[in-house]
Amino acid sequence: MIATERLRLPLLDAAVVADLRAGARRPQFHPDFPRPDDLDAISMWREGDPWSVRAIVRGVTALGTIGFFGAPEPADDDVPETEVGFGLVDEAQGWGFATEALTALLDHVDALGVRVRARTRPENARSLRVLAKTGFTALRGADDDGHLVMARSLP
Image 1 (tube, one colour):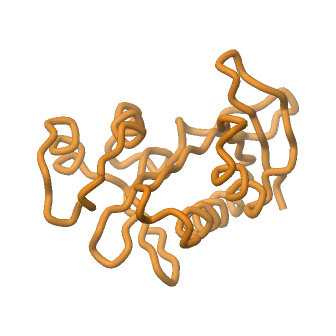
Image 2 (tube, rainbow, N blue to C red):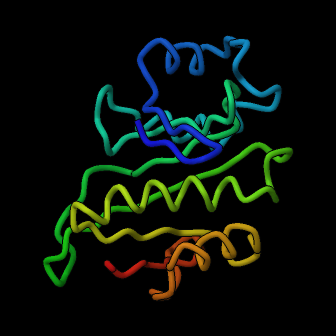
C-alpha cells in the first residue's frame, strides 16, 4: 500500500474491478467515479501486479485512479522505463491530490531505478502542471494522437 498524508493508493482488487466493469456503485465511490478514463485504466488491470492500476482514495472515498501501463521495459538507453497515467473526478481537482498521489507513486519506483514517462493533451493545463511539479521536464515530442510525451529523469 502506498500512502501519503492525505491519500491512500491501493491496488484495485478483483471484486472492485468487477463492480467497475459492471457499472455497480459502491458506497465508497465518489458520485462521479468512475470517469471514462478510470474505466479505460481498468482495462489494463492485472490482479496483484504492482505495475497495475490503483485507486486514489481520500478518507474512504475513491476519487480517481493512478497507475502504470505495464511493467518497465528497457528504453533505447537500456534504462528501465514505464508510462504512468492518472486522473481525478472534477470535484477533487485543484486540491493538490494528483500531485500528491503522483509524487508518492514516483518515490516508490525511484527506489527501483525505473524512469517514468507520461502523455497528456497539450491543452490540459492541469495535467501539465502536475507533471511539471513532479519533475517531468524532458519533452519527447508528440505521439500520433497529438499527446505530448514527457519523461522524468531518475533522481
